[in-house]
Image 1: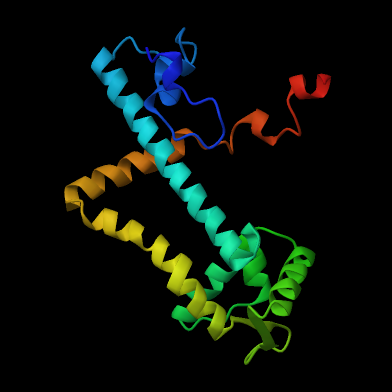
Image 2 (image 1 turned 180 degrees about the vertical axis):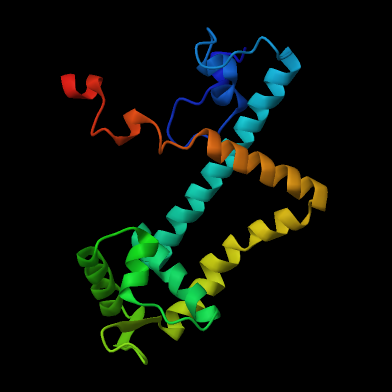
Length: 202
C-alpha cells in the first residue's frame, strides 16, 4: 500500500500513484473485489488510474489557460468550438443548434450570444434559407486566434494517438469506451437527486 507521504495534501500538487492506488481508496474491498487480481495487477491498474489522473490534470490546466486567454467561460468556449467546426464544414449554425449542442435553454443561448457578440467573437445575420432563424458565425479574428493558440495545443492529442499502432489504438478505444460505460450515471437513482442525505442534515 502507498505510504501517506506519497499522497498529495495540497491543491495543485502533482498527482502521484499513491492517491489513485486502490488500497488508498478502498482498503477493505468495499468497492472492488480483488480476489482474482495479483498484487502486480493491482499495482499496474493503480498506475493506470494515476496516468488518467495526470491526463485530467493536464486537461484542466489547458482548459483554465484557454479560458484566461480568451477571457470567456466554459459555455462560451464550447460554443466557439462548435462554431469553428461548423465553419470548417460550411454548415450554418443557428441559435437552436447551439442550444442543443450545449444543452442550455433558449434564454441562456440568447444571453451567451449577446455576450459573445459584444466581445466581437461572433456575428448574427439573417439565415439565407430560413426566415425564422438566425445564422451565427465566429468572427475571422477570433477563429484565427483560437486556432493559433488553444486549437494548436488541443491538436497535440492527435500526435500522441498517432504514435500508437493501429492495434494499440483499438485497445485504448475499447478501454476508454468500456470505462465510460462503467461510470455512466444516467441509470443511477442518486445521480438525479438534488443532494445527499448528509448534505441535507448540515
